[in-house]
Image 1: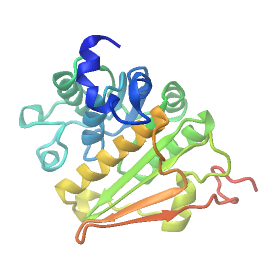
Image 2 (image 1 turned 90 degrees about the horizontal axis):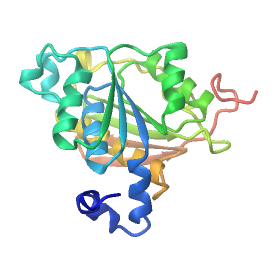
Image 3 (image 1 turned 30 degrees about the horizontal axis):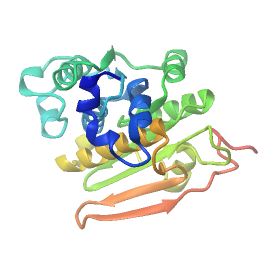
Length: 248
């Protein structure tokens, strides 16, 4: 870590139990972000500002005017541009030391697994169940920690899956409790700051996992009802009959 980095990240380095070693872990980390929409936008910006060394951005979409209400990594000048390129430019303006790798396509099957294996942590910031389950499966296969977030209307949730820890639930276990909720923001709506709160929380959880700092939400589900700003945390148990991680 050079003198400029010591100054830039000084407010984090002075935190007890994080210190120089925690910052060094961030600088050497590789994070895979699936989706550069409402959740991926704040998550990517905060991880870049915190000093994560390499960010791999995955999205096959282009910036649309309707995105600008909540996807803060993009601007008016980016309309029609691929989201990963727009996000890369915003990150470069914020922290030029961060290496940004862009993948302007959907990752599936072996291609998805290949990128997950290379990552130290994966952020699921997508908006459809099929992709969430595929990312969950790849993380289980590679024993890569996963930070999953979701937001719709005025409700949001975050959980952390860490296959390195025995007898802990995966994302598929969670869907067995909540059902296959496949609603989208385009049909149900979403309040702009809500995705910012959830995306920033995902970034915080990723930093905790990467630096072994604090207690990540492994085996827990954090829920936000933004109308009343009511937070709840529930414990999640591993489903022994889960088709993704179960033992039976």
